[in-house]
Image 1 (cartoon, helix red, strand yellow):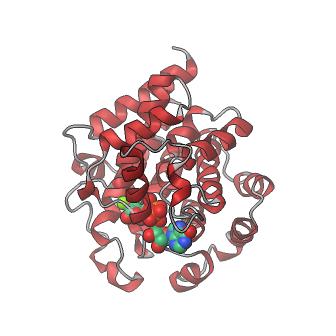
Image 2 (cartoon, helix red, strand yellow):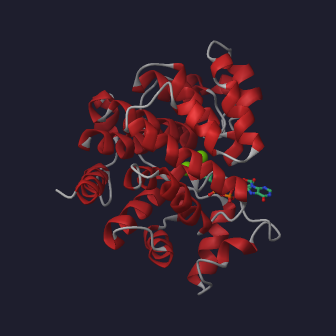
Length: 297
Ligand code: R7I
Ligand code: MG
Ligand code: MG
């Protein structure tokens, strides 16, 4: 189980770093691939995931004000944050409360970007044994930056996928997710996964998406996990679809890492991942702490 906690967080960081150099490329342009990690640098996806984990560990559960302050402390603009999240972080820095800030962007609609889902894996680990609480906490952790229901629902589906993968569920995962989600766009796409398992890339992109909206990327990551039976092929496939490659790669890596465990992640990818301040050594420590707190050892 400890190896699966590590697998989820390191898998997520590795997927992010692998996808980052080709973020925004079209499907046919990701031809650089499979070239392995070019720089090994992670982006906003992992920087924010680290903030979620740190806060859960320090507060022994969800604390919105603390998690928001972690996002601010860890923020580096050069890790390429989404414009909505950047605007919310500026509001938070100016003193607006974490309950309020995310409601002020996109003309009051709030963001449905995948920025909440991309960082949510630690919530999936921490609340893995109680799906009702997990769903609720995923919504709250999302709200700090993403107040649109589709942004929150995508993050809850993602957290639930990580928890189910951790517990060894694969065949049962899709029906469990369909039974949980109340948003039709997610239910529709989840129901398409099984019949798309042999589809070509263009069809997958048209049916499931490869964009920055949560509903254009979360189900694509779950699909990438299902299409193969090992970590490496799933993550390479996720990135080969183009579009929001770091984020879809990262979410696929989180689910796959939770399912297969740390040993299943190619060693050369882990070797290339950055390891300075809050690099892979620190991410492994976060995974171990989450595990220790959860299983009281
Ligand atoms: O969700 P977010 O943090 O972005 C994450 C992405 C990932 O790919 C990261 O790797 C990083 O590159 O950025 O940032 P947001 O700006 O909140 O959402 C992402 C995009 O979704 C926005 O820039 C919009 O294009 C779109 N979007 C919306 N468009 C219209 N109305 C999100 N919410 C809305 C909306 O309500
Ligand atoms: Mg990113
Ligand atoms: Mg991205």
